[in-house]
Length: 405
Image (cartoon, rainbow, N blue to C red; front, side, top):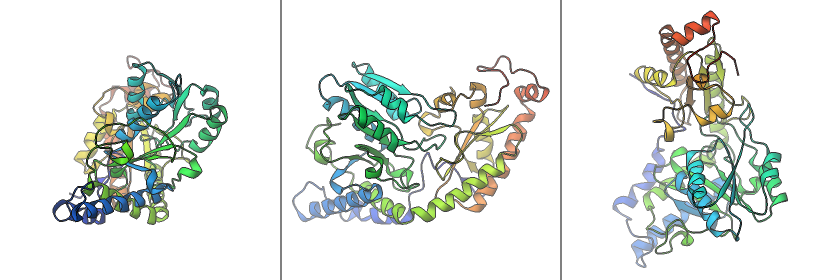
Protein backbone atom coordinates (compact mmCIF):
# COMPACT_ATOMS: atom_id res chain seq x y z
CA UNK A 1 0.00 0.00 0.00
CA UNK A 2 1.34 3.43 -0.95
CA UNK A 3 1.74 5.62 2.13
CA UNK A 4 1.05 9.34 2.35
CA UNK A 5 3.31 10.96 4.93
CA UNK A 6 1.65 14.22 5.99
CA UNK A 7 3.27 14.80 9.38
CA UNK A 8 6.18 16.92 8.22
CA UNK A 9 5.90 19.41 11.06
CA UNK A 10 6.90 16.54 13.35
CA UNK A 11 9.86 15.60 11.19
CA UNK A 12 10.83 15.44 7.54
CA UNK A 13 12.60 12.84 5.45
CA UNK A 14 16.32 13.55 5.29
CA UNK A 15 17.15 14.77 1.80
CA UNK A 16 19.22 12.13 -0.06
CA UNK A 17 21.74 14.84 -0.96
CA UNK A 18 22.18 15.65 2.74
CA UNK A 19 22.69 11.96 3.52
CA UNK A 20 25.27 11.73 0.74
CA UNK A 21 27.14 14.73 2.15
CA UNK A 22 27.17 13.19 5.64
CA UNK A 23 28.45 9.69 4.81
CA UNK A 24 32.20 10.39 4.50
CA UNK A 25 32.23 11.92 7.99
CA UNK A 26 31.26 8.60 9.55
CA UNK A 27 33.96 6.40 8.01
CA UNK A 28 36.59 8.41 6.11
CA UNK A 29 36.83 11.96 7.43
CA UNK A 30 36.05 11.09 11.04
CA UNK A 31 38.44 13.43 12.82
CA UNK A 32 37.65 15.58 15.83
CA UNK A 33 37.37 19.23 14.73
CA UNK A 34 39.49 20.28 17.73
CA UNK A 35 42.44 18.08 16.74
CA UNK A 36 45.47 19.74 15.15
CA UNK A 37 46.29 17.03 12.61
CA UNK A 38 44.92 16.80 9.08
CA UNK A 39 41.94 14.68 10.12
CA UNK A 40 40.92 17.38 12.58
CA UNK A 41 41.49 20.15 10.06
CA UNK A 42 39.30 18.36 7.51
CA UNK A 43 36.48 17.98 10.04
CA UNK A 44 36.82 21.59 11.21
CA UNK A 45 36.62 22.88 7.64
CA UNK A 46 33.45 20.83 7.09
CA UNK A 47 31.86 22.30 10.21
CA UNK A 48 32.73 25.85 9.14
CA UNK A 49 31.35 25.26 5.65
CA UNK A 50 28.08 24.08 7.20
CA UNK A 51 28.06 27.08 9.53
CA UNK A 52 28.19 29.36 6.50
CA UNK A 53 25.42 27.39 4.76
CA UNK A 54 23.11 27.67 7.77
CA UNK A 55 23.96 31.36 8.18
CA UNK A 56 22.94 32.07 4.57
CA UNK A 57 19.56 30.42 5.14
CA UNK A 58 18.67 33.05 7.77
CA UNK A 59 20.72 36.04 6.58
CA UNK A 60 23.29 35.83 9.38
CA UNK A 61 27.07 35.92 9.58
CA UNK A 62 28.74 32.50 9.94
CA UNK A 63 30.23 33.50 13.28
CA UNK A 64 26.73 34.13 14.64
CA UNK A 65 25.68 30.48 14.26
CA UNK A 66 26.07 28.17 17.27
CA UNK A 67 25.39 24.48 16.63
CA UNK A 68 23.21 22.59 19.12
CA UNK A 69 21.41 19.26 19.32
CA UNK A 70 18.15 20.69 17.98
CA UNK A 71 15.38 23.24 18.46
CA UNK A 72 14.75 22.39 22.09
CA UNK A 73 18.35 22.98 23.09
CA UNK A 74 18.47 26.16 21.03
CA UNK A 75 15.38 27.52 22.81
CA UNK A 76 16.86 26.54 26.17
CA UNK A 77 20.18 28.19 25.40
CA UNK A 78 18.42 31.39 24.33
CA UNK A 79 16.17 31.66 27.38
CA UNK A 80 18.48 30.32 30.07
CA UNK A 81 21.43 32.10 28.53
CA UNK A 82 19.66 35.44 28.48
CA UNK A 83 18.29 35.02 31.99
CA UNK A 84 21.72 34.17 33.31
CA UNK A 85 23.65 36.89 31.54
CA UNK A 86 21.27 39.82 31.93
CA UNK A 87 21.95 42.85 34.04
CA UNK A 88 21.08 42.57 37.76
CA UNK A 89 17.35 42.80 38.34
CA UNK A 90 16.48 41.93 34.73
CA UNK A 91 14.75 38.65 35.51
CA UNK A 92 11.53 38.94 33.52
CA UNK A 93 10.57 37.00 30.40
CA UNK A 94 7.87 37.93 27.91
CA UNK A 95 6.51 35.18 25.70
CA UNK A 96 3.20 34.03 24.19
CA UNK A 97 0.79 31.43 25.52
CA UNK A 98 1.09 29.33 22.32
CA UNK A 99 4.82 28.70 22.25
CA UNK A 100 6.39 25.26 21.82
CA UNK A 101 6.89 23.34 25.09
CA UNK A 102 10.64 23.92 24.70
CA UNK A 103 9.92 27.57 25.52
CA UNK A 104 6.97 27.23 27.89
CA UNK A 105 8.53 24.52 30.05
CA UNK A 106 11.83 26.40 30.17
CA UNK A 107 9.98 29.49 31.37
CA UNK A 108 8.37 27.42 34.13
CA UNK A 109 11.77 26.11 35.15
CA UNK A 110 13.19 29.62 35.28
CA UNK A 111 10.20 30.83 37.28
CA UNK A 112 11.04 28.23 39.92
CA UNK A 113 14.41 29.97 40.23
CA UNK A 114 12.96 33.42 40.72
CA UNK A 115 12.23 34.65 37.20
CA UNK A 116 8.85 36.07 36.24
CA UNK A 117 7.10 35.31 32.95
CA UNK A 118 4.45 37.50 31.33
CA UNK A 119 2.36 35.67 28.72
CA UNK A 120 0.93 37.37 25.65
CA UNK A 121 -2.48 36.12 24.57
CA UNK A 122 -3.40 35.47 20.96
CA UNK A 123 -6.51 36.62 19.13
CA UNK A 124 -9.05 34.30 17.50
CA UNK A 125 -6.87 33.98 14.39
CA UNK A 126 -3.78 33.06 16.41
CA UNK A 127 -1.80 36.32 16.44
CA UNK A 128 -0.10 38.16 19.28
CA UNK A 129 -0.30 41.93 19.47
CA UNK A 130 2.99 43.85 19.19
CA UNK A 131 1.35 46.70 21.12
CA UNK A 132 0.46 44.33 23.96
CA UNK A 133 4.06 43.13 24.01
CA UNK A 134 5.34 46.69 24.29
CA UNK A 135 3.00 47.36 27.22
CA UNK A 136 4.45 44.42 29.15
CA UNK A 137 8.14 44.96 28.40
CA UNK A 138 10.19 46.99 30.86
CA UNK A 139 13.81 47.61 31.79
CA UNK A 140 13.54 44.51 33.98
CA UNK A 141 12.85 42.31 30.92
CA UNK A 142 15.74 40.01 30.04
CA UNK A 143 14.24 38.44 26.93
CA UNK A 144 11.14 38.52 24.71
CA UNK A 145 10.45 35.22 22.95
CA UNK A 146 7.73 34.94 20.29
CA UNK A 147 7.80 32.09 17.78
CA UNK A 148 7.92 32.97 14.09
CA UNK A 149 5.43 30.28 13.04
CA UNK A 150 3.29 28.09 15.26
CA UNK A 151 4.05 24.38 15.18
CA UNK A 152 0.39 23.35 15.38
CA UNK A 153 -1.71 25.84 13.43
CA UNK A 154 1.02 27.36 11.25
CA UNK A 155 0.20 30.97 12.11
CA UNK A 156 3.02 33.35 11.14
CA UNK A 157 3.54 35.85 13.94
CA UNK A 158 4.42 39.57 13.51
CA UNK A 159 7.88 39.08 15.03
CA UNK A 160 9.40 42.06 13.26
CA UNK A 161 6.75 44.39 14.71
CA UNK A 162 7.15 42.82 18.16
CA UNK A 163 10.90 43.49 18.02
CA UNK A 164 10.42 47.12 16.99
CA UNK A 165 7.83 47.83 19.69
CA UNK A 166 9.79 46.11 22.44
CA UNK A 167 13.08 47.84 21.63
CA UNK A 168 11.33 51.18 21.86
CA UNK A 169 10.41 50.37 25.46
CA UNK A 170 13.38 48.32 26.68
CA UNK A 171 16.60 48.83 24.77
CA UNK A 172 18.51 46.12 26.63
CA UNK A 173 15.91 43.33 26.35
CA UNK A 174 16.92 40.57 23.96
CA UNK A 175 14.43 39.40 21.33
CA UNK A 176 14.28 35.69 20.47
CA UNK A 177 12.18 33.80 17.97
CA UNK A 178 11.70 30.08 17.59
CA UNK A 179 11.93 29.70 13.81
CA UNK A 180 12.02 25.91 13.85
CA UNK A 181 8.85 25.52 11.76
CA UNK A 182 9.44 28.56 9.56
CA UNK A 183 12.98 28.02 8.25
CA UNK A 184 13.01 26.40 4.83
CA UNK A 185 9.34 27.18 4.23
CA UNK A 186 9.18 30.98 4.26
CA UNK A 187 11.93 33.61 3.91
CA UNK A 188 13.72 34.09 7.24
CA UNK A 189 16.13 37.00 7.64
CA UNK A 190 17.48 37.95 11.05
CA UNK A 191 18.18 41.52 9.94
CA UNK A 192 14.66 42.10 8.65
CA UNK A 193 13.16 40.47 11.75
CA UNK A 194 15.40 42.49 14.05
CA UNK A 195 15.95 39.60 16.45
CA UNK A 196 18.98 38.87 18.63
CA UNK A 197 18.43 35.13 18.86
CA UNK A 198 16.77 32.63 16.50
CA UNK A 199 16.32 28.86 16.90
CA UNK A 200 16.58 26.26 14.13
CA UNK A 201 16.19 22.49 13.91
CA UNK A 202 17.74 20.54 11.04
CA UNK A 203 15.11 17.81 10.80
CA UNK A 204 12.32 20.27 10.04
CA UNK A 205 13.85 21.17 6.65
CA UNK A 206 15.09 17.76 5.45
CA UNK A 207 18.27 17.59 7.48
CA UNK A 208 19.14 14.89 10.02
CA UNK A 209 17.69 14.67 13.52
CA UNK A 210 19.76 15.53 16.55
CA UNK A 211 21.29 18.75 15.27
CA UNK A 212 20.14 22.36 15.34
CA UNK A 213 21.46 25.88 15.63
CA UNK A 214 20.98 29.12 17.48
CA UNK A 215 21.65 32.44 15.81
CA UNK A 216 23.33 34.69 18.37
CA UNK A 217 23.73 38.25 17.15
CA UNK A 218 27.28 39.55 17.32
CA UNK A 219 27.84 41.25 20.67
CA UNK A 220 25.04 39.43 22.51
CA UNK A 221 26.13 37.83 25.78
CA UNK A 222 24.63 34.53 26.96
CA UNK A 223 25.43 32.20 29.80
CA UNK A 224 26.64 28.86 28.36
CA UNK A 225 24.38 25.83 28.15
CA UNK A 226 27.21 23.45 28.98
CA UNK A 227 30.71 24.15 30.21
CA UNK A 228 33.78 22.22 29.23
CA UNK A 229 36.27 22.62 26.43
CA UNK A 230 34.84 25.90 25.16
CA UNK A 231 33.38 24.63 21.88
CA UNK A 232 30.95 26.80 19.88
CA UNK A 233 32.33 30.08 21.20
CA UNK A 234 32.11 28.77 24.75
CA UNK A 235 28.31 28.51 24.62
CA UNK A 236 27.96 24.79 23.96
CA UNK A 237 30.95 22.71 24.98
CA UNK A 238 31.27 19.17 23.65
CA UNK A 239 32.73 17.55 20.55
CA UNK A 240 30.70 18.64 17.54
CA UNK A 241 28.39 16.22 15.74
CA UNK A 242 30.27 16.60 12.47
CA UNK A 243 28.12 14.32 10.24
CA UNK A 244 24.92 15.90 11.56
CA UNK A 245 26.24 19.42 11.14
CA UNK A 246 27.36 18.66 7.58
CA UNK A 247 23.89 17.25 6.83
CA UNK A 248 22.21 20.31 8.31
CA UNK A 249 24.41 22.59 6.23
CA UNK A 250 23.58 20.76 3.02
CA UNK A 251 19.87 20.73 3.84
CA UNK A 252 19.99 24.47 4.57
CA UNK A 253 21.69 25.11 1.23
CA UNK A 254 19.06 23.09 -0.65
CA UNK A 255 16.21 24.77 1.24
CA UNK A 256 17.55 28.25 0.46
CA UNK A 257 18.06 27.50 -3.24
CA UNK A 258 14.57 26.03 -3.68
CA UNK A 259 12.61 28.17 -1.24
CA UNK A 260 10.39 30.02 -3.71
CA UNK A 261 9.55 26.98 -5.80
CA UNK A 262 8.96 24.75 -2.78
CA UNK A 263 6.76 27.30 -1.01
CA UNK A 264 4.58 27.84 -4.08
CA UNK A 265 4.12 24.12 -4.58
CA UNK A 266 3.35 23.42 -0.93
CA UNK A 267 0.87 26.32 -0.84
CA UNK A 268 -0.99 24.83 -3.80
CA UNK A 269 -1.15 21.41 -2.14
CA UNK A 270 -2.08 22.90 1.23
CA UNK A 271 -4.99 24.75 -0.35
CA UNK A 272 -6.11 21.52 -2.03
CA UNK A 273 -6.22 19.88 1.40
CA UNK A 274 -8.13 22.73 3.01
CA UNK A 275 -10.57 23.19 0.12
CA UNK A 276 -11.09 19.43 -0.08
CA UNK A 277 -11.96 19.04 3.60
CA UNK A 278 -13.72 22.27 4.61
CA UNK A 279 -16.93 21.28 2.74
CA UNK A 280 -17.31 18.34 5.15
CA UNK A 281 -20.23 19.19 7.44
CA UNK A 282 -19.29 20.98 10.69
CA UNK A 283 -15.60 21.30 9.77
CA UNK A 284 -13.51 24.38 10.54
CA UNK A 285 -10.00 25.66 9.86
CA UNK A 286 -7.87 26.36 12.93
CA UNK A 287 -5.85 29.56 12.57
CA UNK A 288 -5.58 32.18 9.87
CA UNK A 289 -6.23 31.15 6.27
CA UNK A 290 -3.90 33.79 4.83
CA UNK A 291 -1.00 34.26 7.25
CA UNK A 292 -0.05 30.62 7.75
CA UNK A 293 2.82 28.41 6.69
CA UNK A 294 2.56 27.08 3.13
CA UNK A 295 2.72 23.48 4.36
CA UNK A 296 0.21 23.55 7.25
CA UNK A 297 -3.46 22.56 7.24
CA UNK A 298 -5.07 22.21 10.67
CA UNK A 299 -8.80 21.49 10.78
CA UNK A 300 -11.29 20.39 13.39
CA UNK A 301 -14.19 18.03 12.78
CA UNK A 302 -16.99 18.30 15.32
CA UNK A 303 -18.20 15.16 17.01
CA UNK A 304 -15.06 13.02 16.80
CA UNK A 305 -11.77 12.44 18.65
CA UNK A 306 -8.57 13.42 16.87
CA UNK A 307 -6.64 10.44 18.26
CA UNK A 308 -9.13 8.01 16.76
CA UNK A 309 -8.99 9.87 13.47
CA UNK A 310 -5.18 9.65 13.35
CA UNK A 311 -5.30 5.89 14.02
CA UNK A 312 -7.93 5.29 11.35
CA UNK A 313 -5.93 7.32 8.84
CA UNK A 314 -2.81 5.34 9.65
CA UNK A 315 -4.72 2.19 8.74
CA UNK A 316 -5.62 3.84 5.43
CA UNK A 317 -2.00 4.71 4.68
CA UNK A 318 -1.98 8.36 5.78
CA UNK A 319 0.33 9.69 8.49
CA UNK A 320 -1.06 12.74 10.30
CA UNK A 321 -1.19 14.14 13.83
CA UNK A 322 -3.69 15.69 16.17
CA UNK A 323 -1.29 18.14 17.78
CA UNK A 324 2.46 18.56 18.10
CA UNK A 325 4.60 15.43 18.27
CA UNK A 326 6.41 16.74 21.35
CA UNK A 327 3.20 16.53 23.38
CA UNK A 328 1.24 13.89 21.45
CA UNK A 329 1.20 11.45 24.39
CA UNK A 330 -0.65 13.97 26.56
CA UNK A 331 -4.40 13.47 26.49
CA UNK A 332 -5.41 17.03 27.29
CA UNK A 333 -6.52 19.33 24.52
CA UNK A 334 -3.90 21.38 22.71
CA UNK A 335 -2.98 24.56 24.60
CA UNK A 336 -2.73 26.33 21.23
CA UNK A 337 -6.30 25.48 20.20
CA UNK A 338 -7.66 26.38 23.62
CA UNK A 339 -5.86 29.73 23.40
CA UNK A 340 -7.78 30.41 20.17
CA UNK A 341 -10.98 30.23 22.23
CA UNK A 342 -12.02 26.84 20.84
CA UNK A 343 -14.02 24.78 23.36
CA UNK A 344 -12.13 21.76 24.63
CA UNK A 345 -14.58 19.23 23.17
CA UNK A 346 -14.05 20.76 19.73
CA UNK A 347 -10.28 21.04 20.08
CA UNK A 348 -10.07 17.28 20.64
CA UNK A 349 -11.42 16.76 17.12
CA UNK A 350 -8.55 18.52 15.34
CA UNK A 351 -6.23 17.11 12.71
CA UNK A 352 -2.89 18.52 11.54
CA UNK A 353 -1.77 17.67 8.00
CA UNK A 354 1.64 19.07 7.07
CA UNK A 355 3.51 18.86 3.77
CA UNK A 356 7.08 18.93 2.50
CA UNK A 357 8.89 19.47 -0.77
CA UNK A 358 8.53 15.74 -1.42
CA UNK A 359 4.73 15.62 -0.96
CA UNK A 360 2.87 14.62 -4.13
CA UNK A 361 -0.55 15.39 -5.56
CA UNK A 362 -1.40 11.72 -5.17
CA UNK A 363 -0.65 11.85 -1.43
CA UNK A 364 -2.92 14.85 -1.00
CA UNK A 365 -5.75 13.14 -2.90
CA UNK A 366 -5.32 10.04 -0.74
CA UNK A 367 -5.39 12.16 2.42
CA UNK A 368 -8.57 14.02 1.43
CA UNK A 369 -10.45 10.84 0.53
CA UNK A 370 -9.22 8.90 3.56
CA UNK A 371 -10.06 11.74 5.96
CA UNK A 372 -13.57 12.12 4.62
CA UNK A 373 -14.16 8.40 5.01
CA UNK A 374 -12.65 8.23 8.48
CA UNK A 375 -14.65 11.23 9.74
CA UNK A 376 -17.85 9.63 8.43
CA UNK A 377 -17.08 6.31 10.15
CA UNK A 378 -16.26 7.97 13.47
CA UNK A 379 -19.33 10.18 13.43
CA UNK A 380 -21.55 7.17 12.82
CA UNK A 381 -20.40 5.86 16.23
CA UNK A 382 -20.31 9.20 18.06
CA UNK A 383 -23.00 10.12 20.62
CA UNK A 384 -21.68 13.71 20.54
CA UNK A 385 -22.31 13.87 16.78
CA UNK A 386 -25.86 12.62 17.29
CA UNK A 387 -26.48 15.45 19.77
CA UNK A 388 -25.03 17.98 17.31
CA UNK A 389 -27.25 16.71 14.51
CA UNK A 390 -30.28 16.83 16.78
CA UNK A 391 -29.48 20.40 17.79
CA UNK A 392 -29.03 19.39 21.43
CA UNK A 393 -26.44 20.92 23.79
CA UNK A 394 -23.28 18.89 24.20
CA UNK A 395 -23.66 18.01 27.88
CA UNK A 396 -21.15 16.03 29.93
CA UNK A 397 -18.23 16.97 27.71
CA UNK A 398 -15.58 19.27 29.16
CA UNK A 399 -15.99 22.65 27.49
CA UNK A 400 -19.45 21.55 26.32
CA UNK A 401 -22.04 23.72 24.68
CA UNK A 402 -22.72 23.73 20.96
CA UNK A 403 -21.25 27.02 19.86
CA UNK A 404 -19.22 27.50 16.69
CA UNK A 405 -15.92 29.38 16.88
